[in-house]
Image 1 (cartoon, one colour):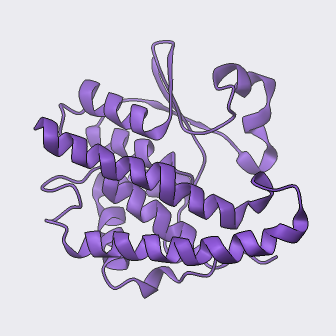
Image 2 (cartoon, one colour):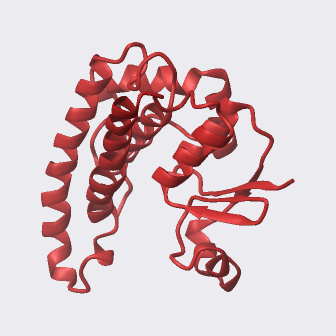
Length: 216
């Protein structure tokens, strides 16, 4: 099989994982066990020197970074149904996807893995406290987006924004932000997870939407 997706359960790689299932594209899912450090193995670093997931490999060509992978799947395998075709509307959808990826996602990382941003353990508590409040505000913004979904965040078709919203909501549970506490995001995420194709990715990754805080 020429199309491979390297993913880790519950990571942002869930977004392209589910998109490939929705598109009905034959692909080989390649599990990367982050907790065992497989992303830092020489074999994986030869594939992606940054040691991150997801990685999409298409006939030997390697593509990294969520926004690039989503755009590639949309253009090559999904007939353009995951992103608007109108140039301005597509730009606005990518604008929101980029915000999810380059702002909301790193905020969570500051809470969950403060050691990535400071070697001084004395600053970790402050990093976590400050960024938890910031992440709560960002999830509130996503909750408002879900309230206006028609019926999906990007419009008529389920797409990457819905999948990333589900992912970010789950992560909130890890840091004490109850996923069920979002009046619009919680039901929207459940609707996303129950989509037949998305459910395949949810089952493969063994995801639970009602995530509990990680014990120290």
